[in-house]
Every structure is written in structure tokens, then in C-alpha cells.
Amino acid sequence: MTRGKVGHTMDSEQIIRRAYQAAEEKDVAGWVAAFTEDGTFTDESIGVTYRGPKELAFTVENYARAFPDMHRELFRFYVNGDIVVVQLALQGTHLGALQLPVGTIAPTGKRMDAPCADVFELADGKIQRFDCYPSGSVVLTQLGVLENLSAHLQH
Image (cartoon, rainbow, N blue to C red; front, side, top):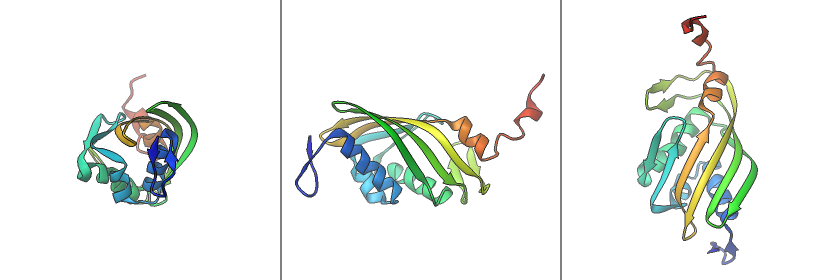
């Protein structure tokens, strides 16, 4: 249990819900503050781990720019002490450039509603480790990026 700003005790689920709320509100400082000093965020769909305030901030800024209406629809929480697993959907309209390690995807104007699972490990009421498992192939398909894939496949 951790003390919240208003003096009440927060459980692991509440800590994670607060972090999601910070990301949803594009509160970059609040998002970064949700992590321990050495906390990490790994986007498993692209194999990149972010650490430190600048890199953690980039994750929210990048998706906020690419999907100004970005929403995380939270379905289920599974909590075991300091481990929290969340089933959710990533939703939004692709209206801005999305930076990926392989390049930038120009705005498509299309909506995504992609399944995702997040695994958090907490330490002293903050996120020590965040492993995000978004369905990258679903996102790219919904954005129309994979539309021409069939032209490259041999039958």
C-alpha cells in the first residue's frame, strides 16, 4: 500500500489507474513521476525499452501527437501484490506522424482499436517495470499500413 496525495492509501490497481490517467490526460510530468528513478517501459511490439525521464516522456508525447484522441479502454485488472496485469484496447484516430524505430508513419486518418496487455511491476508505490504487449500487426492493419502486404506474398 502507498500513500496518495490526499493522504489515503492506494493499492496496486489504483497506482496503475493513476498512471493510465496521466497518459490519457497527456500529463507527461505525471506519467514520468509514476516511475521509479530506474523504471523502464518496454514496448514489446517493437522491442524497445525506454528509461529515464526524457525517454519515458517521449512515449506519451509520440502517441499523443500521432493520436490526439488517444484512449486506453481498460477491461480487466489482475493484481498479485506488486504485479499488475491489465487487458485493454488502444484506441484513437491517426492524425499525426507516428515515430517508430524503423521510421515514421505519416497520418492515415484511420482509427485503431487494438488489443493490448500490459504487465507492471511496482516498487515502493511506483512503476519499476512496465512491459507493454500491443498487437502491432492489428494496429498496422487498421491504419492501412499492411494493405499492400499481399502484393509481396507468394502463393
